[in-house]
Image (cartoon, rainbow, N blue to C red; front, side, top):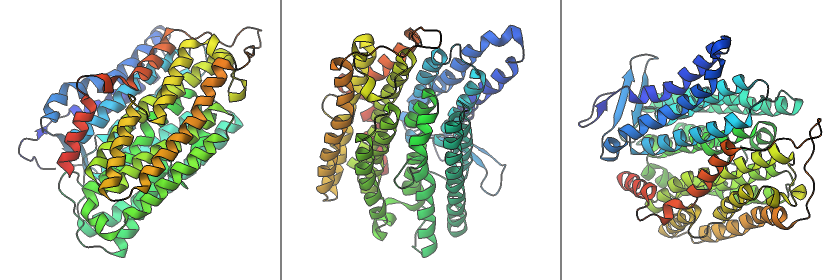
Length: 497
């Protein structure tokens, strides 16, 4: 990849991806050395905090317009390329921050449980894969990390080693194979037609053809599976219900967004918005996103299992991002990027709260949560904040994202999209707020005892601190004098449009 003017050749993007990978390998080694087993938790924190530190170091330069890249002449014909532009640094900061938050929570969640070393290793490897996706310099490199991430998450789903976990992991595995084959076909077609898979060099596709439409559909299938776009969502509810809460949080906060990120690169670096708009292909995704929003919300309404309700609601809420992508306007693009962050704070808080409830009470069914608000007031207050945030009212982050998505709908003269967002907001309130009402005002039921006759586990500050951080993140940026993420996102959108 040639240097372009003010671009900076650097190995920082490489080390940001390698840091969690090295930490995972080191944990595996020290697990066989009794005197070093105590270093495992420190390695988890080091492996997740190092990418955040590296991204923070280069952020000022990238925000000013510099691009960090590194190209390796291996894996011909396109090579292995790393690249951090403004979009990449935004996603990288989010991914590394949320990985660190989950890691802090995870250490307490797994304390005293078996096979924790295995989970930590695959968690770090999956985090490395996610960072590799957003720090990739071409579609081939992105594909490699995307597949690596998926294989590591397969192991996380199977962590509990139950028949339910094995069934969910196998469903995810087979859908991952479908995604991988689809992406491989799409990449092969684009390279055969254009000879270019690099990001940031302009859209190489000029003339439409049935072959290019085939590649576009394959990209939609491959990335749509990870983004849980209906009808490609089948793996998600079962996987979330079967895997440990930190794995579900990792997927919801980070991994789902890699599918969205892949589609962003397809739209704006391979095909180009003008080409897609001219061929009307975005209408396919608009229809799928709208259907996913309604379908996910309706399914969430009828779930009594707390984790499955969060899973189905995630299908609807991530589809806001896909909806913004398909509108192909600057305002909609601003909304979709802001919703990537807003959803991660909101849904991450909900999942970590759900995990805390299960840890302390052993309860998963919403109908059994009566009195939990009195037993765990801080956790349920945070859950309520996140639930209200999902509705999309001021001053919460989701209001900002829905505002810009609505402006994008007006840009393309599709006011029905605003109606869709309003209906979805009502449905969000319908399936989130009753949980809090039940927890605070429902009849109290005693926690499920452990075999020893004691409460399952009393949560500590290591669990509540990440929850508080995510709850604050759901609205803190909108109250600040300068909304830093929104300013960066607007800059990204202006550069693209």
